[in-house]
Image (cartoon, rainbow, N blue to C red; front, side):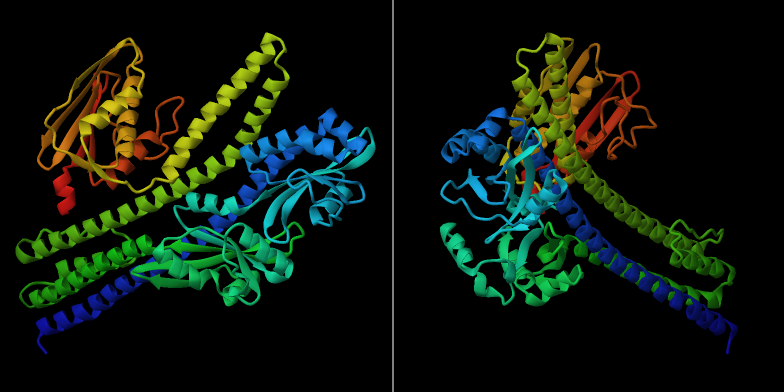
Length: 609
C-alpha cells in the first residue's frame, strides 16, 4: 500500500473516533444538564413551599401575640359571653382576613372544646383534637403547622391564653394554603401545581357539600385513594398534561414513598416534566403530595439547537478530516498532527485550542476554518453558560426577595401597630418609628427590583407610537431644577410593535441613571430617528461618564458602582430589549457624559420576521 494511502487511512482511524467521542460527550453533557436543571427546579419548589409556610406562620404568630396582649379580649373571654366575644372580635377578624388572608379564628376552652368561631358563630361546643392544639398544651407556647380539616388544608397557629398564671384557654388562627400554589406558579414562571390528599383524611359527605357550595364539580370519584383538593388553572396544553400528571394514583404513591422526579409528557409539541414532593402535616405524617407540571419546552429547544450545532460541527470536522486525509497524499503530515492535537483538546473541553501553522494554500485555509469553528463553538458555549448564570441569578434574586419580604412584612406591621398605639408618644419615638417605616419601604423597593428581574415576563406587544411612550415615561420622572431637558422627538416616526409598559420601564431606568450621573448640574437630551430597520432613541447626559473598564460590565446583573444600588436596573433593561429583538448600545467618556442608544425593530419588520 502506498505511503499516502497509509497516512490517509491512519489519520481517519484516529480522527473519526475522536469526532464521534466529541459528539457523544456533548450529548451526554446536554442530557445531564437537563436532569440537573429538573432536579434544581423540584428542590427549589420544595424550598419555596417551606418558606411560604414559615413566613405565614410568622404572620399568624405575630397576630396571636397582639391578640394575647389585649385586656378587652381577655376580659370578655373570662366572662364566657359568646355573643359579646363574637361581636367584639369581628372587626379584627375581618381586618386580618383582608390583610393576611386569615380564614379561621377560634377561642378554645382549656379542656379543648371550642367556645366560639369568629368565622362561624353557629358552630361551637365541639372538641378540637388537632395536633397543633396538643403541641400548644405541651409546650405552653405558640404551635404552628399545616393540618387537614374535613375538606381542605389550613396553616394553623395556636397560642395559650393566660390570666396572670391561670390558663384561660387557647386562641387559634388559620389560613387556607391554596394561595401557596398561585405564589409558587408566579415565582417559578408559570409552572402548574396541584395538591393531592389521601381520602382517609377527608369526610366524603362534607367534601361533596363544600364543592357544591363553591360551585365546583365533585371530583371525589376521579381517583381511587386520593383526591385533588387544590390546583392552579391551566391553559389548553397544560390541562391535557395535568390530567396525566395530577390524576394518577401511581404517581401519588410514588411521591409518598419519597420519589420526586417522575416522567416526561409530550403534548401538542410541548414537553412537560411531571414531578412531586411529599406533603406532610403538623404531625410529620405523609398525608398527600404536591405535584408540579414543569414546562421544559424552551430548555429542550435550546438543547436541540445546541445539538444541531454540535452535529454540524461534527459533520464539518469529519468532512475536514476526509479532505485532510486526501490532501496528505500531496503534502506532509506535520500540520495534520497539529490538527489532530487540536481535536483532542476540544474533546477534553478546551475550546480555546487553535491550530497554529505557517503553511499556505489548503493547509493554511483548513487551519483557519478549524479555528473559526472552535471560535464559534466557544461563543455558543459562552452564551449557554451566561444563560445558565442569568437563570441562577434570577432564582437567587427570587429566593432572596421572598425570604426578605416576609420578615419585612412583620417589621412593617409591627411599626404600624406601634404607630397606632403610641400616637401620644414623644417626638423622638415617633421620629424613629417613621424612620423604621421609611427604611422598610426602601427595602421593599429593592425586593421589587429583585423580583422584577427573576420574573421577567414575555412582552405583550401592540403597535404604538414610540413618541407617546417616551412622553409617558417622562411624566413619571421628577426632573431636578439643576438639570435641563432637551427633547427632539420625530413627529413622523413609524409605529413599533412593543410592550408599552416594558419599554416605558426601559426609558425610565435609563433616564434615572442619567439624572443620577449629574448630581450637580447638567443637560439631558432625548432624540429619536429611523436608521435602517430600526427606530432609534438616544438618551444622552453630560454627567460623570463610565470608565472603559466598567463599560463592558454594566449590563451584567449585580454589577454596580453606586453606593445604594444593587446592579439590576441595566440588566433588566438589557433583558427587555433582547426580548423585543432590539439592540442597546452605550458610548461614554469619563467626565463628559454617556449616551445610551435603544434600537427597536420597525413594526413591519417584526411582523414579517
